[in-house]
Length: 181
Figure 1 (tube, one colour):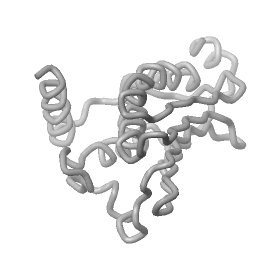
Figure 2 (cartoon, one colour):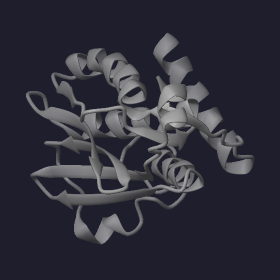
Figure 3 (spheres, one colour):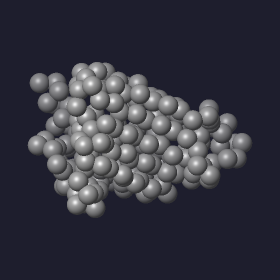
Figure 4 (cartoon, one colour):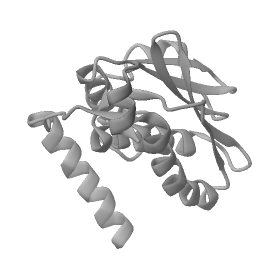
């Protein structure tokens, strides 16, 4: 009952977010810390499904202008989707790093993959391949990432898995790094 109530709560939050998106706040934040928080909390979900959830953090601090709550929602959605797409014995890997003037976060799974003809629509509202769910998670995630001046890309191969990559402009000034720590 508690799990179903949590699912219903998520549905309602998603619907409310589509109708009236929560304002995004921007603060200097260290990506490694925010990703670690969510990755740790998702390990138990992975274990329940027989999926290893692993995280690898780039040398930091990896500072961006972000909203910890909103990005936590994005990470949680991507990791949950990856776990659900991956068969027992599989793996979900979250990697953070720096690429030029960008901070990157990737979520990679060894799951079923997404057919090429479905890739173009996965970020649309109410598009889902699951029996349960409203198909809003990726649409909302994309909106959040774009509101933070970031991008979200997907690469998938059927039978091999999927990689979602988030990229955000890096903040390099010392005051931002101090604020994020």
